[in-house]
Length: 130
Image (cartoon, rainbow, N blue to C red; front, side, top):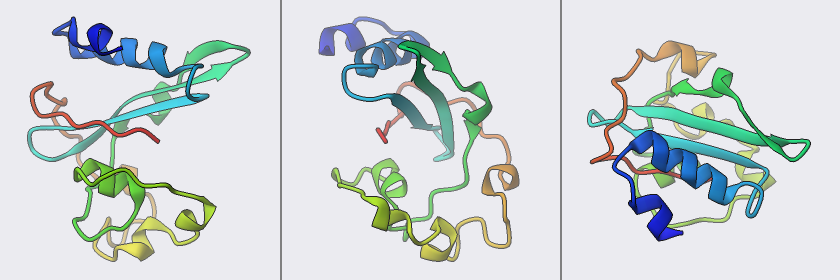
């Protein structure tokens, strides 16, 4: 697995390989979020299995709301480099904006309230798995 991911210098190729390793062996969905050099989150890949075939969901890709330092949500923690955590349905009973008042304050649609970030850089990207 490591050889397949590290044997290319292309970020796009490495992400394609990661998705092919994860689906369907470990999950039905793969969501890859990267952080740009300016600490902006970019949802880079969303792929799921449909009738056994991978289907890209480009409509779910793109800029994400800023990651507040105080947010206890698993995605925010993972993007800040925190250790792994187990999340269950109870984790998401509170909306992320209520869990962290500063995240996208006053915006009912956080993805639409952020400016488009610069594309992520391979040198500083951290990824998270759902």
